[in-house]
Length: 136
Image (tube, rainbow, N blue to C red):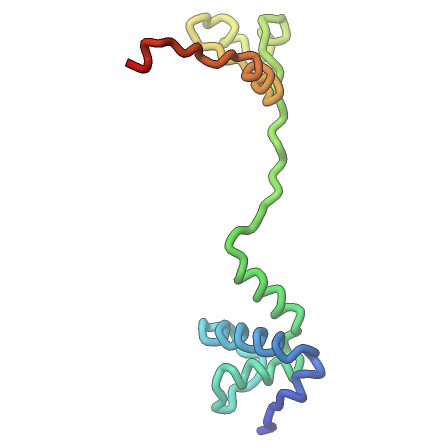
């Protein structure tokens, strides 16, 4: 059994602090049940993690990405913004699209409004007028 030394691993990961972070993260993954890429040889998880880094059976870049991903509390997902839906009118094309909705006048009609229209409408609102009755 060959002894793994920090000098062997420094060739793969230049920064000693980063080496400690990556090896400890890999040791935690091994303790959680991640598959081994080298033989255990009665070694504990931190030694196995250092051997994996030294033997390059697992790359330091992959470990770094896994470490960053495990530390993130909020992962931002880019979702497409909803487009403004045009207003439905009683044109012949609207009747052709939904003939049952055009013939059923009892169904509620909802208008779609874009965010810009809503903001313009809110700007035109006047604040409530204060009266003397409110203080008493």
